[in-house]
Image 1 (cartoon, rainbow, N blue to C red):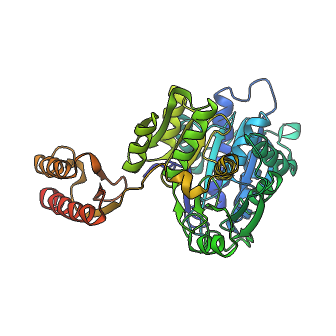
Image 2 (tube, rainbow, N blue to C red):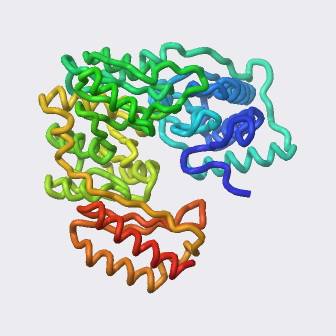
Image 3 (cartoon, rainbow, N blue to C red):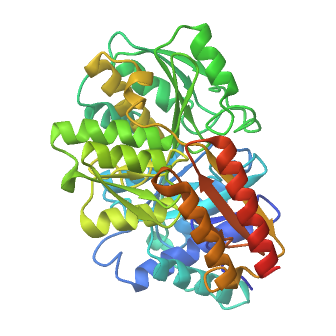
Length: 452
């Protein structure tokens, strides 16, 4: 039986993999585990619960709230808000636990559960494991110790959460956005109200698309995984830039005034230089992953900013940042963490800070993003191979060495075994796309021959 918790909580097809019974059981298990860990000691426990607009979030929220209250936890139900809003409110309200129901950029039928510890930080792996163990034990028939009378939790809607979160976002901006026209694509998701409101309060003229969620249309042709409509809208409205979120708004991609995509690496580059100029980039260091574009690495080296790279996944970026006190990190996909103001990736905050830089400098987003040249990147999946031998095969090592000699300092090779499938991912970057394709093809053939 595989681990229930993945790298980003529990996810699956709602009402098939992720049921109301599971949501209720996990909520009760979380309450018991945190109580045993001493988190609730000396006071009545409180949890913040939010969700994205998926239809399944309605019954999953009801189950989650019921489970927490039945375990003696008071619940503040904040409704439809972004994942980073739930994290921020968990910290701001000094709650003992935060719960977000969302499957992020996944299609509508999916949903997920993510827990936050006190302070709004991701729950430790050890606590997730204990919650899963407790959940499985009680799902097999072990009875719960249930409070009664005044010991049961109380539930109330916390409608103030929306304004509190928007005020937090606007309050951390270094300058206003007056004079900017920004197109916002809310992916028909959790930021459909929050992001336009925050940009408007900060002074921008906000044009919106993908901001009419009906419970069924989340991520459907809109958002950070579908940029075409945003690109067209930016050009049509002659906007200064466009901002795209995913379903739970923990990520942000951008579009410049010409309709060209500005990815997470470019956003990080712009923000890194802005933060260094303000004295906020601790250690003159930004944290990325091994998939960060080589152009980003070269640009940061040229600008005197150190790049620390981690394994792929925003959780690893965050761990590195917290371990060494770094202020900025993120991924090419648009997960950007500004640790002084957020405990997780925050797409609305990222978009606001990017727009603030445009407003403060008077430069176009295209000009600012031009600090780095995004080198062509080719990714080839090599299936049906023994991925466990990718690091030990002499033939693979020889092929990689030959490719690296050919590319020199203007290219890069990365081989990664898949975490879930019997395949190896071959990534090649080069100054020329044809060279990248050629090298990637030869390396894929070598991996297939050596490991197939």
